Length: 98
Image (cartoon, rainbow, N blue to C red; front, top):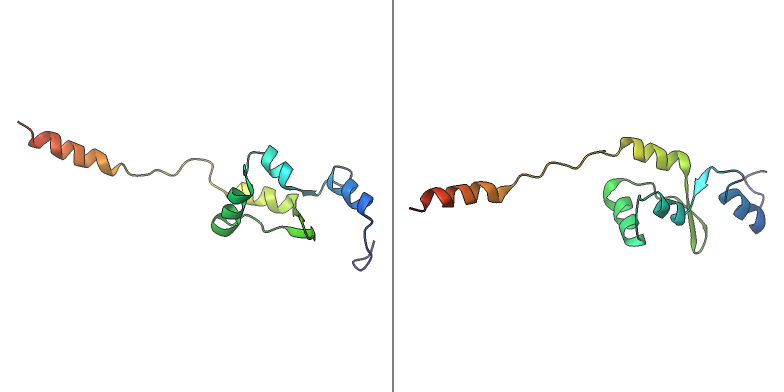
């Protein structure tokens, strides 16, 4: 199929649902526990560099599996260490008490 040919809807659905599994939809992203909601997915796109994907129609968005797996490969696997600011304050307060 050339780039200018229109893909019939049943064929497009077949391509997205498993025959030519090179893309994924939001349900797949949710099932993979990457994002639980559209709000979380939009935050990942805006702040974490998740691929934007492409619009297949006015209300249908899909992502290339290669893009999603590349993003997963570069994302951190462990939680970022957050300093415990209260620990030092509590230690200082407990030393002041008689």
